[in-house]
Structures are given as structure tokens and as C-alpha cells.
Image 1 (cartoon, rainbow, N blue to C red):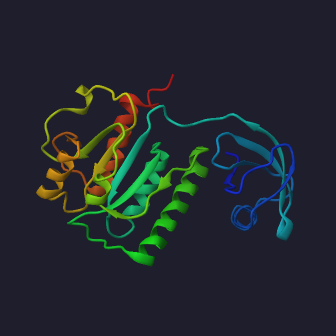
Image 2 (cartoon, rainbow, N blue to C red):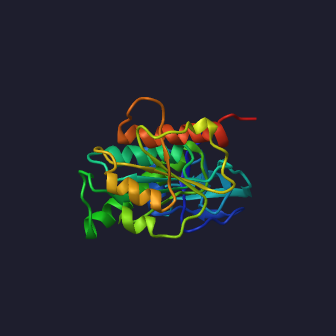
Length: 243
């Protein structure tokens, strides 16, 4: 697979393009690319440019071709609202959610969240997750980078205007996903922390218009649940069935 790199400053197709420092470092020092090697650049605005590495070092550059109108986004716009999880679970969830086609990941602080984040610590962690999303796009072929939202409380998130259908994963909820009608607009799925949503949080979500949802008879871990839902939604309403 041709190495892919995100250039947030924007691309200049059909030109000799100076690579951002971070991209140049990754290409030369990590992937050991050399002059003449092929690469692909994208800037998050849609499409991508194939190119050839012209120079390495402090003035690393690539000769770019035209912008190709390549899109690998799912027709289903699905966002994941993930309650903060401990350890490296959030890293895993963000990475895999991007690979599975999520258009956004919103971290929320829940009553039973083991991980507590605020202030500078929260901002640094969100920036870290955003870089994980970038790397996942580079690896998976996506040309549009999902936004990782700032950490907010569940109550604050639910107070925002809602667009499309919202589901809250709740073990024991009635109604199989396969029997639900495909929403006309975007879909959002709320996933609880290690200890699950509290009764008060489930009530708050219901009053905000979130439909309870369960996936089979088993209780899934927080780092598994959201990814399982995303895969199921892409199979039912997204691009997993293929042509």
C-alpha cells in the first residue's frame, strides 16, 4: 500500500509541494522513504493527490499530480459518543471507530467513568486522540478526518440540539437493531463507561430523545460495545455490504 499522509495546511495539486515537517519526518525517519518513492497526500477537504518524493531532509518535497476525487466515506453518517474509559481503551476506541467510518467521536464524562479529565489534561488528551484519528485515516484510506470533540459531561452533551436518530446502548433494552427502520439522517450512538450508565443517566438520555438499544444477550465491555454497534450499523445501513 502506498504511504498516505495528512497535510492539514492544504495541498497544491500539480506542483512541487513542500512537505510539512511532521510529514517529512514520518516519511523519512519512520517509513524510510527515499527520493523517487511514491506517496499519497490528503488535506481533509476531500480527494487526494498522488505524488513522488523529490527531496528529503529540511526541504523535503514531493511532486504532486492532480487532485483525484476519491471518497471512501460511508453513506451512513454515524457519530460515536463514548463515555470516558480508563487506560488505553479510549485510544483503541478512537482508532477503530475511525476505521469503521465514524464521522465524529465525542468523549463524555459519565457518573461511573473511572477516568476523570478536565482543564489542560483534558485538552492534551483530546489532541492526542485527534492525532490517533489522523493516523487511522492515513492507514484506512479515508480522506476526511473525523473530529474528536472536547470532553463534556453527558448532561451538557444531551442539552445540545439533536440531529437525526440517537441510540443509547443499554443491556436488556427491547427492540432488535435489525428491526429498526433506517433513519433518514445521521445516527448517533451513546456508549457507557466500564460500570455502565446509571439509571439517572439512562432517564436523562430517554428524556433527550435517545432510543435504548441492546446488542444480543451478552454484556459487552465499553471498548467493545461501540465498535460492535458501528460494525452492525455499517452492515445494515452503511457500506459494509459492498456493491
